[in-house]
Image 1 (cartoon, protein in one colour):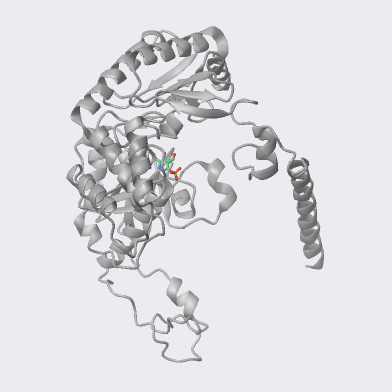
Image 2 (cartoon, rainbow, N blue to C red; image 1 turned 120 degrees about the vertical axis):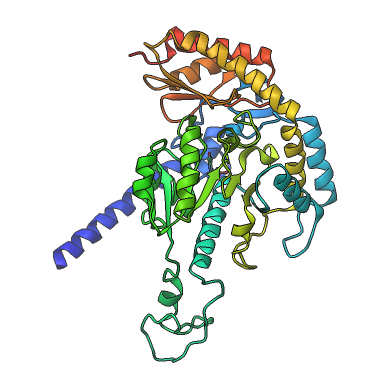
Length: 481
Ligand SMILES: Cc1ncc(COP(=O)(O)O)c(C=O)c1O
């Protein structure tokens, strides 16, 4: 016993020494002497994006954006096929967008959710008019939108058990320390308070999510995110999550049960590498969730708002989810997130159940309204599909005959400015070779080039970018079989 305590203490001391030495290495540049982006990152930023301060390429720092281009500090232009990870749908520094940002910032940027301002109400109205949902909740990011959706699902599940009001929080006896739900105190002074309050009350607490799915990095959203590499360091996560195989309804059926509150699915997986859920699978999901009295949550943080060629990605399957989460392109680069819900879900939510300081502020929502009106325009969406067909046509001309290098070209079911080009090996070399030629591609996993340009990109720009991609892949920057 004593020996194992001593060895644990020894291991802890070793780990502390290791961390201290890597902290010294990171902070070896004296305060005020860091100059390059890499040095500044190593000295002042948490190392969450890079271990050595290098992002994509040493010495590359972007200073400006204009339309489909990013411009570095040396003035070199890069055609942007990543659009800030599917965020800058209207491109960079769009003038009409910038005018809305400036005019709302000069009018009223933030006031708190204690009072009314017009922009969140107008954005909620338009989101509802343009979707199958009835109510909106605003927050600041995709992960926050999914956190909110998961909480709304828990609250709705509680209502399924008839538990719509708070329990009696008056402690019945000051010396009772057992886990009796009635023995609670709102002041938290009773010893049995934390256990009693935190004990699950609903019968339905489980969430079914999917292999390859990505829903964010905060604890709740991370719990339903599949990727082992980003979740295992943070266990224990929120419990009661079961992962099923995408496009395998039998596997979902095995995962379902009366304790399932919700199924969360990306109609087209983004971080997974542009992997669509089949239309038939989405329709079966709708049916199986209804049969099991569970909610269907569509995470459209990446695939929504025109990225899939339609305003909402679930449209193509003709299904109506019970909730949908949005973020990335909704304000074209300003932080915003939204959850859209059906009325029967909203009916279970009470004031105080959820909220936030910034969510729905007039700046983000006025800009969101501008972006939504432009993307929802049928002519805009038709243009996205037309340009998407052009991009996909150019790609398939050579990818189908390059099976020695290209493993798979993945794309949404509708023509769209979105695709995942999976090679047989790492694509880092392709990204670097394309950068040399002035085109920025991003990845989705080590072997997939993700094409997600601004939705405003021109056909000529697409042709140029696809030419560069072909040269870089065929020219040997992509690993071969
Ligand atoms: C489908 C999906 N959901 C949620 C998120 C998380 O969004 P955020 O990074 O804004 O928290 C992402 C981000 O990539 C996403 O692609």
